[in-house]
Image (tube, rainbow, N blue to C red; front, side):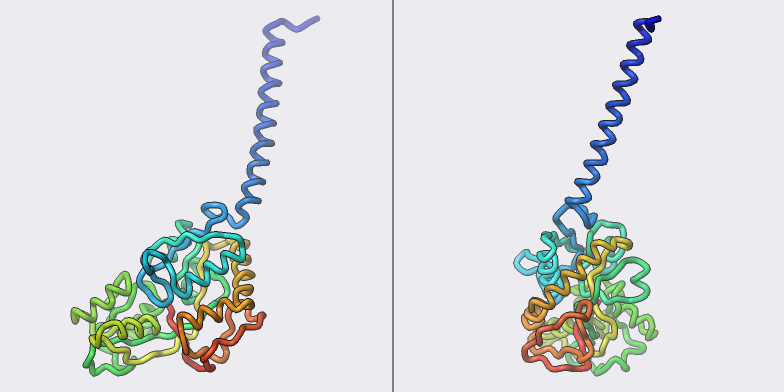
Length: 295
């Protein structure tokens, strides 16, 4: 016996709904597959690395004529190019940078970030690409000549840096500030008697101060610096490491060393990247136990 007209209509409607859902599901799967193919590293925007960096830490990371540059940022741009990616730099404070990477405000952090066990609890790191040491800046005429004279002194440090960690571990009296310009102002105003800074930054600051600030001493930092990425993004980190080895092998790393750190000694035991590729020698540099800037 034929089904009533109303029943037939309900059956047709239900069948159509199922078909629409099936087509929708297929479209969703196809869309997800396409998105994964177009954006294999899970970036905020396909084809673009959004990078948190600083504006005031030359020669590592800084703004010049409105453009983000410096050794770290130029190296990252070269690394991204090997992956067919563009880079968008955004200025931030170092004290907030690692949390912003973890929370995916940025795809990556670039700021001569020293690898430490404590920081590994917040972010993942690429292979190391540079080495670091501390610089001690003091006002001209200061009787402070070395790190062993900082006890009881007010010492400026940028919050969240390894210099901040150092001041805490050594039981100093740190004046924590958000950025390097603020640290310099502490010296100029007399509210701090010394500033523990990344050495290259401290050296340049003293050179540009017109004799008001001097670099009293430097001290080696044992850990390498690296780019920071969000925890768990292993595909992105692996791709960065591969590309980093490529720019080391093709001489880009060496050229940037010569450009930003002319004549700087390279520690004899330091090997950038995975350590498995041949590094073109840095012109004018000799193996040394000392190293460069780190945050």
